Image 1 (cartoon, rainbow, N blue to C red):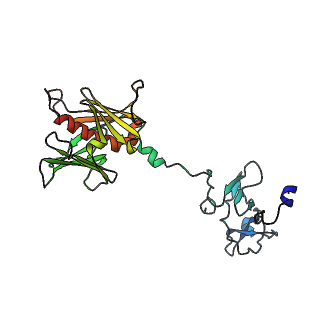
Image 2: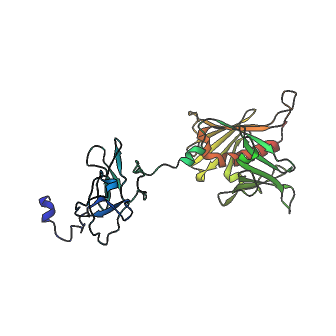
Image 3: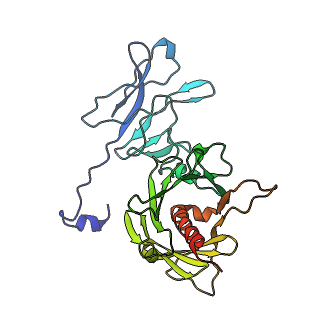
Length: 322
């Protein structure tokens, strides 16, 4: 121990107990089954005839300390080789003390049954389930009316084989106290039982003062959340206005993510989503289907994208045009 440690006062030196070192060794029970017992001083014990080739050792009394599960046995060239393992309170060395041994944490490893392989990784695994949900390529979604329900549509990936893969459930109803108001509700998933994303209320005429939007448990006037820059450009405030979604109209809607409070005129921002309203039907396009495309970088803003898109498209439909 360094002299600096010896010279320190007793109050400055933490009381760190020495690791308790135990030794796992194979033994045999009444049924001639191999069992592992931990002890401090191994003593030779003759194995039963059925396992005469196995290495031997005995047990020693364990004190009050709880013990980790025994290590697995290792086989080499068709013969059983029971190796001993040194165990401390914090870590265990599995295998012989050679290049094949490895050190694992006793606090993070789960219990193992005899003969199973020890986990290789010591660090926690990443949440692969969440990562798998984010597409790595542009995704196209269609706004599909729900059959038998004239007030509801769902947003479904174009590659989906059924409506059960719907991303959002969108329903438009009237305010019962004032039918000139339309209430649009967006929920996660393909049914009305999904988690509420938000809703907004718009008026049939062009009045905007009474229009509201409810999002992330807060209700605001729409004009405080969605800024009208000009008739074909809107800025949707995210995260208290620290970031923006910039919507621009030119035959279709494009959405750009601006990671600041105001966009720079000299900087080009990536397009993270596009919306294409349905066009006039024709023999080559017999269905009135609106669709949108979301880039991988836009998936994390999907809730903001879908909510703000429905508002700007509603406003575009309402604007008087000459």
